[in-house]
Length: 424
Ligand code: GUN
Ligand code: FE
Image (tube, rainbow, N blue to C red):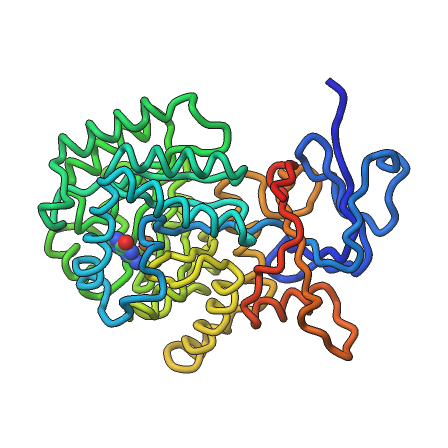
């Protein structure tokens, strides 16, 4: 088969490391067979015959990864911000998720979520569904149609969840196996991820059962860790003898770099927990907006970075109100400034390159070589039109990106590419 490719021309900006942003006002990004061949100010002769899409002065950036979100909670985004995590789950999240038992409701509600994800700057996402097999498969079907690349998890819970939404250990494992069987061979872009909700809702037997499936099917894992003080207290009561919250997953065999694990939050992670996540190569999904909406706190992100934990950003809808990873970048910087001011003056606030890195290459690493325009990376790109914000200044592409983040505007998308295919 002969090579197929194309060239995009415009103002290009991306991150190869968390220290600096690459930024070219007039450049070419080359894609061949779905893989990036790099960014050039002068187009090399070997690519001169590829079809070119000229975006002129529009901004071309790598696609964003949302490393943690809850599709069924999208229906109450921007609502119910009056409770702490555990009460918030009980009063708002569980009743809403239970509604996905109804096929028609799930179908319509997931359609709205998927449409929004398709329209935004996110090209990859790691997603919680509900406990329901049918609804989770429907969500996967809808996501597959969009061209986005995602991991989706049927949620597992066998304790401390209201009866109307709980499962027994056996039911939970059997339903997971049934779901995996039905999903097998059905998708190109949508993959299952094991999803124990969090330790308060998962017995040791359930976690151990899921760890067996992890090994057998070589599946990645997603969950929550050390999000709120009340939650952590409950974990300490339930699971005696653990060195830290994450140890409740580790001792069952759920943490590792291959297959990968991602844990959301780590707001209250101590040195022991951070060291454990670093040692196991576990990803942290930092979800700053959710952390203040449900009054959990501010995650010590720099401690995770210094320890070598791979960090990406999560919207955590509906703890977070928006699916926008642009907003998550801005929120991460702002939250880190408050952390520096009020909590730890030794920990410098996060910088723009650091959060841009987390949103692209940092979180993208959960999917492999994703989130950069370096040669060899899968070609995910978003083209943005920022002409709605005129200025007398001559801005670099990196400054234009910064403005869009602070204006929370990633909606003016004129092109979106995933694995080298143009979605629109
Ligand atoms: N911990 C367990 N479940 C959830 C959830 O749905 N949202 C958040 N923010 N934290 C959780
Ligand atoms: Fe969450």
